Amino acid sequence: MAPIPMNQVAPQTITTRSSGRLWPAFVLGLMALLALVPQFVKRDDVLNLLFIVFLYISLGQSWNILAGFAGQISLGHAAFFGIGALATRTLWTGGVPFALALLLGALAATVFALVIGVPTFRLRGTYFVIGTLGMAEALRITVSQALPRVNTLPTEQIVNYSLVARYYLALALALATIGTAIVLLRSRLSLGMLAVREDEEAAQATGVNTLKHKLIAFTISSFFTGLTGGVFAFYHASFYPQAAFTPHWTFDALLISFVGGLGTVAGPVIGAIFYILVRERLAVTLVDVHQIIFGILFIIVVLVFPGGLVEAWERLRRSRRLARRGR
Image (cartoon, rainbow, N blue to C red; front, side):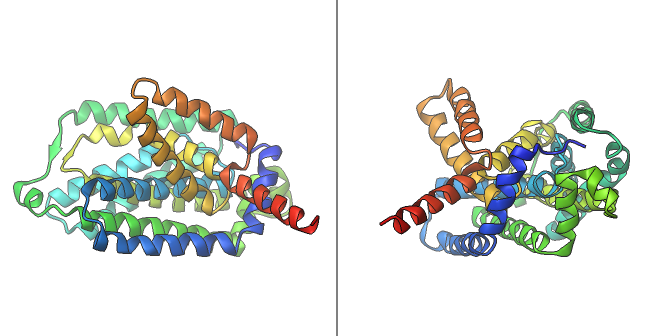
């Protein structure tokens, strides 16, 4: 179901293994250093920008676990993001402690994923992709009709609003998502997922329980996507429920993963940083056409480097090694 073409899988698999030790350590180290930023930077615009980067790292890494590791291209992740956001916001503003509300919101997204997982995984190829997109759109329309009004935080919560606390929460979530991807990729479980990604029928013929591995990837992916939605809902003082179900949450995750390097740990991190910084820059300088320009840039990156920016870095390293040997 929606297998990744082999011409895309091959360079990504090589990149994942060759950088398996260096990239995770570098990424986690960089993210840990970012914990010091609020101690020295007091500008809200910088903290807001980094918050969005962390949020998109979690979003992209969550989608990457399903699509990059298990090869299941889903266009319905906005549903899990929205369920996590809506459930967390509703419980939190209703008096439930935020930590518990966030966990329950993520579990709600996970339960929904499990309920739809078995029937949707029976679909093959583009039918699976269309099925997940249709499910997410049906949920978006339902929520927009049932909850059309803005949800604003109570006065006491607005008074106590802390951007720094939200910054650290988003950073912690990004680290947790990256750490989970590292552990998963180095576990025996990932062997089954990667086998399903490469060739589902061959994996099943060799004894791999394909449905089990796809459901596990789906569960982990939806759980962290729900957490990301919950953090998004916690960030906004005013919150439109339907905004958390819009398709761009799915397509942004897809774009980040492909630009950075699908199937790699570092790919969604690099893709999120690249996407947010370039998007914000283009939005300021080319207000009317920045989305078109970024779309063209995305196409160029994917065509030139099917393995994303991680593959581009690996190519540069290899060329430098060859140049040194030739001296």
